[in-house]
Length: 269
Length: 257
Image (cartoon, rainbow over all chains, first blue to last red; front, side):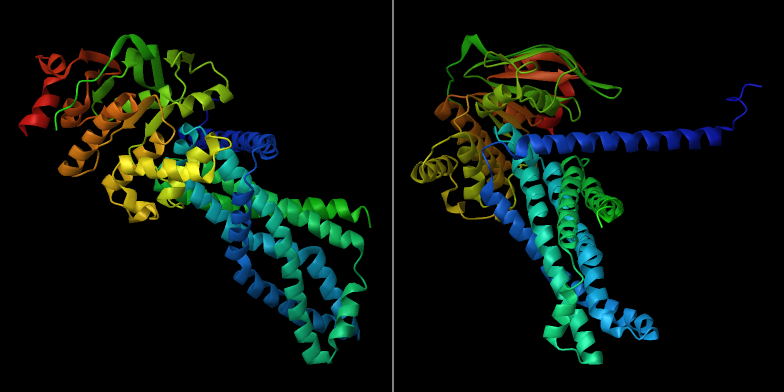
């Protein structure tokens, strides 16, 4: 019997839907790849949009600042509180500042910042560019002899790549402050002693890896947000999809990148 | 207000379209059209919604590429020129969008400055201010200079959209549904503005519309787009002096209703 004819129409339909999804996925990967190449081709060629880059840096910073402050503080506080019982069992609560600092500086600060920025900044970039696409503002820029990609995409991607590492560093210190308040309350450790213990276990590689991670995350959030918005479909539905796609894709990629970078940096330890 | 007689050079086409076809997936929108726009002329393209009128001007400005055919604008073949040449050519073409497409994060002043600053290297602040004030004055909206697009009425947005294209002194103007969604009085004002632009800036224009009043008041020639092709091209009376069942209802609806 012919194997094709033996398959039910429902199964065939499911299979074709699945293959369509697979091909759409690879098509998107290919398009993002072209989008990134275009970014590097246009971003470093004059004229430079310095004013717009500064404005976007300010926007990215302001949009996430409050949320990052609160979240960073809570993460530091909770992480310290939750780690204490385990260390207490071994009578090693004096190691708490070192444990907290390693966890925060190596992983939590860049990751928490990137996740919050994906939600706040990525969605906002996706929605903003999506609505500009829908209302033909991007076309208007193009027909007036200007380069919308350079003005809208390059500036935003550069802004997220610069600002997110700064925010991640800030998150790290706010989280340490949260950790310190908890340690000071329970162990009565002084600020100077806490800070000494915080920086003692940290190596240059920790700071470098954390910085590289934040730069990669910032670039990813910017590129994904811009890609989703710049190529959003027409209509208000397209704007919603662009915002949503920007958040989901950026968060997913941030985790993938986290795994890859951790694997690479652990080889250097 | 009666339209002044335009100085049209019928020997000098600024846009020549030959055998252009465009399809979206299986739907053929344009099926091998030919059209010329002459120097100093206002050409109105009429047709029902979805007949490819807006697609036509997007092809002319290089926002879309045709499946077949050639589009020559100001002596340059749009489909084959480089990105840089296309960018330079676009400065010579003004495009007024159906929904004005004003940059809603910028004030009116910034909207007008945007193309100027990016296309006129070495322009001084004083020259920018002068150009902005002049062009705003020519569309009669000097008082809106510091307002945001969201604070403007539909008619004002249309005028600012036209002003933004005029600031680069284009040789060709492309108007996409200039009177769509406006009240009759504002429509008359926009029609007068289109004629004023033709006289004052000596532009050649393509006006996309399905508003016959706009067509009659602004057009030197009318081209009727039906079934993906130009079925009738001529003066307003030539186009509508017909018993063609696809053309006649268009006229009857607009003027009898």
